[in-house]
Image 1 (cartoon, rainbow, N blue to C red):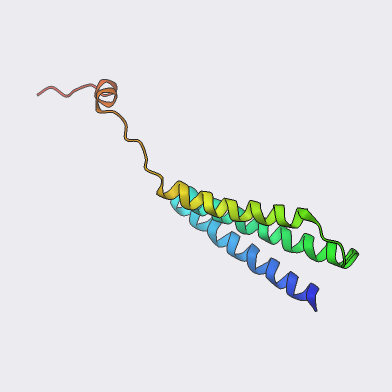
Image 2: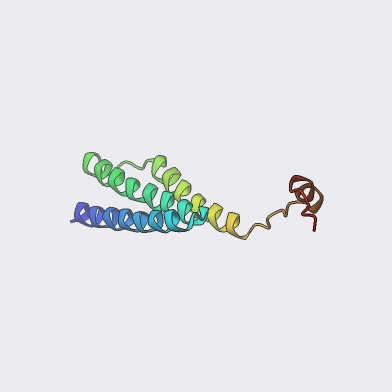
Length: 103
C-alpha cells in the first residue's frame, strides 16, 4: 500500500511540475521554472524513496534529507529571486546607446 501512495504522490508532483513548466513557457518568468524544478525533484525523490524502501525498509539514508533540502531550497530561491529588488539601467548609458531624434 505504501508503494501505491508513493507512486500517486510522485505522479501528482510530476503533474504539478508540468503545469509550472507550461506557465514558465507562456510567461518566461523564472519563478515558475524554479517551482517546476522543485516539484520534479520531489517526484524523483518519491520514486527513489519507494524503491529504496522496497529494498531495505529499516535503513535511514541521509540522501533522502538532502534531496528534500534541494527541493525546498529551490522554492525558497524562487521566492527570494522574485522579491529581490532589480537594478534599473542607468539613464546615461541608455541615452548613449540610442541616437536622439532630431526634429
